[in-house]
Amino acid sequence: MRWLELSVTTSPQSSEAVAAKLLELGAGGVSFEENWDWDKAARLGLGDIFPIGSGQKENIVVIRGYLPLSFLGRQKTTRLGEFLSGLQGFGLAPASLSSREVDDSLWNEAWKQYWQPTAVGEKLLIVPSWHEAPSDPRLTLLLDPGPAFGTGTHESTRLCLELLEGQIRNSDSMLDIGCGSGILALAARLLGARAVWGVDRDEAAVRFSRENAVLNGLDAVTFMEADLNSASCWRILPKVDLVAANLTADLLLLFRDNLRGVLLPLGRIIVSGIIRQRLDEVKESFVHAGFVLTEEKSDGEWSALLLELK
Image (cartoon, rainbow, N blue to C red; front, side):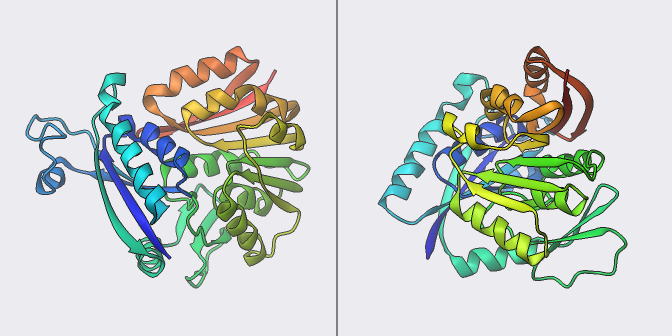
């Protein structure tokens, strides 16, 4: 199968909005390439997009998403371009869009060359399924993300995992909202949670999450395909001790009350995927909704919060 690879080059300030738009347009997942420097931007001919030579040292981010190669995919590319052209009108940094056609084999091989075993926090080692697991005292989680988001390499996922490993108790039930590759749900089970659920709107994400559970020999983990924008979806989700939601600031604010509704009394929630500029807004919203902030972690432009119900 052939795909359209859409690459958006922008600053971290706009990366959250771009990623959310790609997901809205139907990209099965998004990837981030960060820590580009301004010299690299100049070599790529992006001087009209970014103020090369201005002395500014902010990193550049490339967000990539994949859409099926079709007339509809081309239409969605046009819609993405229109969205990007309006970013500055919302006070966000400008962005540059490029696209190319790729096939499954090129995409998969490029991904495999890029991703290596990754130690996260104090307890976890995330290992690509095509690598031999190294000898390591950490808990090893084998993972094949397919087209889904969640490998442990992005800051938002790492922050979530670091908070998660300090929160799991053997009697805990856990729910992963927007499970992607299943990495958070599977890590929770590996860390000792007694029962775990993951939910995502993307069929491919749910399928790969289930395959990853089998790959690791983990039981008591259930993955479901559901539209989180539907009120009926939230009504069928279980009530749990701990929720993890690695989304975007906009989605966290949109789903705030739903997230509260799936927590048991004194339940805890980890929210991640929050860009620095939106951190105070998200904190204030959740505190206003009856949560108590107990821990905050940041890595570069990204932050994650641990909150408890009052």
